[in-house]
Image (cartoon, rainbow, N blue to C red):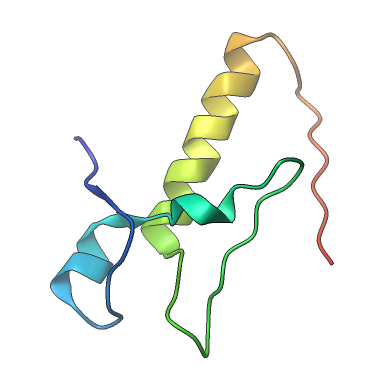
Amino acid sequence: MSLNFVDEARPNTFEFETSALIKASGFREYDARWWFGQVAPELNLIGVQALGMGLGTLIRRVGAGPDIVTGHD
Protein backbone atom coordinates (compact mmCIF):
# COMPACT_ATOMS: atom_id res chain seq x y z
CA MET A 1 0.00 0.00 0.00
CA SER A 2 1.41 3.38 -0.94
CA LEU A 3 0.58 6.58 0.88
CA ASN A 4 -0.48 9.83 -0.68
CA PHE A 5 1.48 12.64 1.00
CA VAL A 6 0.01 16.15 1.03
CA ASP A 7 1.25 19.51 2.32
CA GLU A 8 -2.24 20.92 2.99
CA ALA A 9 -5.65 19.39 3.69
CA ARG A 10 -8.78 20.72 5.37
CA PRO A 11 -10.05 18.79 8.41
CA ASN A 12 -13.15 16.62 7.96
CA THR A 13 -12.46 16.03 4.27
CA PHE A 14 -11.78 12.78 2.44
CA GLU A 15 -8.24 13.94 1.64
CA PHE A 16 -7.50 14.74 5.32
CA GLU A 17 -8.72 11.31 6.45
CA THR A 18 -6.99 9.26 3.74
CA SER A 19 -3.70 11.09 3.04
CA ALA A 20 -0.57 11.62 5.12
CA LEU A 21 -0.53 15.33 5.98
CA ILE A 22 3.02 16.40 6.84
CA LYS A 23 3.80 20.06 6.18
CA ALA A 24 7.44 20.34 5.09
CA SER A 25 7.99 23.54 7.09
CA GLY A 26 7.57 21.51 10.29
CA PHE A 27 11.06 20.06 9.95
CA ARG A 28 13.64 22.31 11.63
CA GLU A 29 17.41 22.09 11.93
CA TYR A 30 17.37 20.26 15.27
CA ASP A 31 13.72 19.36 15.80
CA ALA A 32 10.31 19.04 14.20
CA ARG A 33 7.09 20.80 15.17
CA TRP A 34 3.68 21.22 13.58
CA TRP A 35 0.41 22.98 14.42
CA PHE A 36 -2.48 20.77 15.42
CA GLY A 37 -5.66 22.18 16.87
CA GLN A 38 -7.02 25.71 16.59
CA VAL A 39 -5.16 26.79 13.45
CA ALA A 40 -5.08 24.86 10.17
CA PRO A 41 -3.43 21.53 11.01
CA GLU A 42 -0.03 20.77 9.54
CA LEU A 43 0.01 17.11 10.60
CA ASN A 44 -2.63 14.40 10.88
CA LEU A 45 -2.82 10.87 12.31
CA ILE A 46 -1.72 9.19 9.10
CA GLY A 47 1.18 11.66 8.86
CA VAL A 48 2.30 10.84 12.41
CA GLN A 49 2.14 7.13 11.64
CA ALA A 50 4.16 7.61 8.44
CA LEU A 51 6.81 9.61 10.33
CA GLY A 52 7.02 6.91 13.00
CA MET A 53 7.38 4.10 10.47
CA GLY A 54 10.01 6.06 8.55
CA LEU A 55 11.99 6.88 11.68
CA GLY A 56 11.77 3.28 12.89
CA THR A 57 12.98 2.00 9.52
CA LEU A 58 15.91 4.45 9.49
CA ILE A 59 16.93 3.55 13.05
CA ARG A 60 16.82 -0.16 12.21
CA ARG A 61 18.83 0.26 9.01
CA VAL A 62 21.64 2.23 10.66
CA GLY A 63 21.84 -0.34 13.46
CA ALA A 64 20.84 2.03 16.27
CA GLY A 65 18.38 1.30 19.05
CA PRO A 66 16.46 -0.35 20.47
CA ASP A 67 16.28 2.56 22.96
CA ILE A 68 15.03 5.85 21.49
CA VAL A 69 14.60 9.10 23.44
CA THR A 70 11.97 11.69 22.52
CA GLY A 71 11.12 14.98 24.18
CA HIS A 72 8.60 17.78 24.09
CA ASP A 73 8.21 21.36 25.32
